[in-house]
Figure 1 (cartoon, rainbow, N blue to C red):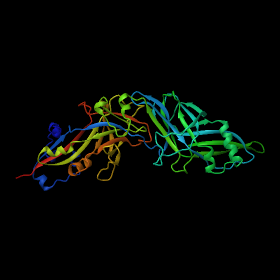
Figure 2 (tube, rainbow, N blue to C red):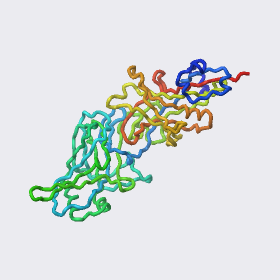
Figure 3 (tube, rainbow, N blue to C red):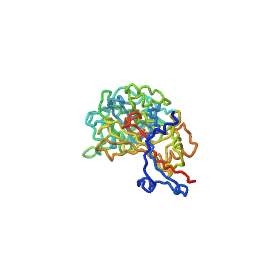
Figure 4 (spheres, rainbow, N blue to C red):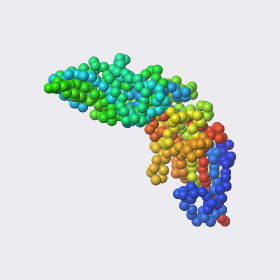
Length: 443
């Protein structure tokens, strides 16, 4: 019965090839003599089986992120979304004038324009001193699930209303005790190199408040944007001469001692069943929905199990176009919880391990782009051109265990989340549309 599902497909007669749409005329299809000398019909098949599910990777690498992500908010579906940054630091100079006197120490953080959720609410940042070394795992990387122990005492704290689109920097005054420690060790030459500094000072954690319900904010990792500044001065003839030493992100160690610890706790019950990366949560078991969340490793998996049944349409055929359409759940996105314009498409094996990114025949990457042409009618959907991929399945013995994986392009660099429709509701379901030319050889 399953192998005959194509028979129930919606088949629309579009007419002879000469009356096809511009999209078909612009396709890569080349008609040979056999095609042009035959009776031709072009059909649209849009009810081939698509299986939609949600998966969650055990962890994702965040040490290569180009931003620090700090903040916390409560999501009605994904739970408490939280991100903190762990960073190792090094001074840009180990020399301080012997006549200088300590003034203060300040942490500077510059916005990089990224934010997620409501920025009108207050955020809090707590600065903690790390008390153990960064210890990368066997893959020589740090993940969203990595951790480094820290002292509970705040080195500094700041409550602020984010302005992520501005060019401003946050300034957080830190403990004078920390500043004096740095100042005296550098001035007296107790610390003169990287190894001595990192032995005494492991780094900092920048953590949101445990009761915050605001937004996750992105800060630049550039050494001119994220740094501690140690201020000191020396007596001049009339005034004091101000000087400073910057303590910047450690980029000399491999891997760099940096990562964003990103989590989402207490999500809806069915998301809590994703306890390891090999599990798949069918949309049939999650209110006909699938889910995506950057930073925590949640992604949507799509299986196309019966594509080869298209060959049973009769006669000889050629695939002209294949488009997968996936509709976001109405009401699941807002100005604060926005949709991305593009998402990436990967191939995964039966264990949900990524095997490769999906490419077109011209070596460009296959993407899911947000079609908003009819947005005023709440008709928006992600559209994926799978023509080259499906043609390869129909004409070769491609591994049938492969599935498609849909994730945002900045999967390790953001906390964006999406809720997509599954396959049960006829008006909103995820569906594959195949435009197929069928022709019969004349006797």
